[in-house]
Length: 484
Length: 99
Image (cartoon, rainbow over all chains, first blue to last red; front, top):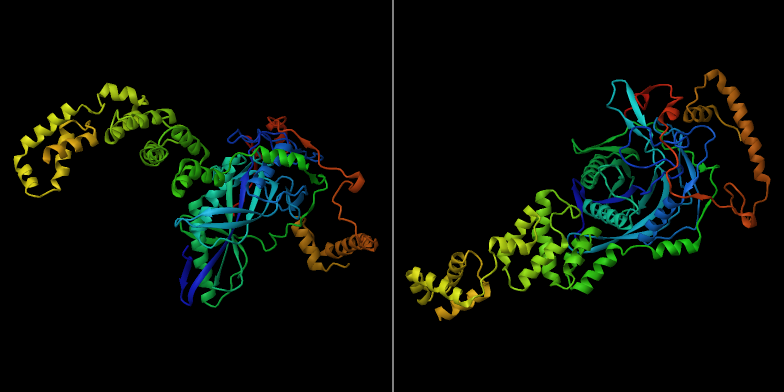
């Protein structure tokens, strides 16, 4: 992996990046209350007195949210802390009714782990995960509904979040993007977070600093709440360039919180008060320590699905696929499942080629996903079978596939209806070859005079005469025989 | 432990409590008194005792009780909004806060 650097006036700079990802936990009810978590409900209809912080209401923790955090920790090959604790993080904001967020400060539920990322050049890198802790989400503020008021909806208040903090191990926008994609894939495999950045169920805070090669870390800035992988990558570059300019002009970078403006492609300081970071954490007196039973953790471990890294290794081993193909096919569990259904008992590489070629292209073109695909794994498998048993040739198969996307019909039906069965009758092929040779005496003479590349021309003419349905191997064979 | 006026001002600001300059001296005395009282706990010998955050520990250890993941609450917007100083529709309405 070539080192990513940014050239400044005083030489090249290295970029140091750490990511804090907030991942909304998939659960029916909230972390400390029995209110529902569904996205998009009418305002303030999924709010209990606990979420609205009415006096005297007490939090009771949701076992499933704890299980989801443990599963995620196990999926990140991280240390599970059997005893952890909840703290209050104090700050005032209109969408935080209690005036504090219940979080885990000193004793998180999950300790150190790792995520392996794959880069464009095929290399891999281990990125350290510092910790994962459970905390409450805040409510939602709507600033654009009224000229002088902000509207507050507490439906999201109290929904469980996992904050997943990386080590400052990332060194380029590409690595940061790869880390986020990999983390999202792992969370989706585990079923602990849907990873939907557009709906805000996964959000990233990006810590960026720059340094000259071999130096210790310099001061970092935190770019808050970036809501797409593309913006994270853009924000890193913009922020790194800003810091380099500050250092090179003889200034110092102040540790501060900044916002990324995608429209301008730059970060700007948040007009926060200087004491915004004084959260005055202290143990939440309403909550006892969270103690996990080792047997329960082991049971959750046994219930984990096959994770992307393992699945990738298995596809390479069992199906003989190259690393690249395997990596593409495990990006989503549904894609991997589709592939395995397709490849079972068939030519595994041919199946991979079809999925990664025409099939993905058709999904992109029609705006469909693997879940809503107009072509099922069974139907695509039938198409591959028709190629393998010589019913149709590869070129016709592409035509049949397009018809399958269009109509949802089975390939066998399309082949019969359109009469696309390939011609393996050598008599018919010979006749077509004879007709082509007779129609092109000049080309035939040139060929005989040594212009051998005209062979391709004859193949094309014969296939055209047969409406593309000739068996390519038999056509080649017949031509070779007649031209000999 | 004695607090200086700047610290008292800062504590009040973090707690969003408005304190007149004239009240500052009295508050300084009261808060310092509370802190001194709590500081007496430092005299207790806790050598070898693990920090305790709520509940008992050791033989009397108590852990957090967990509930099942079932929707049992919500659907009460009128009650939730009953004490709102201002509301528009089913939203709380607050003075515009824009970062």
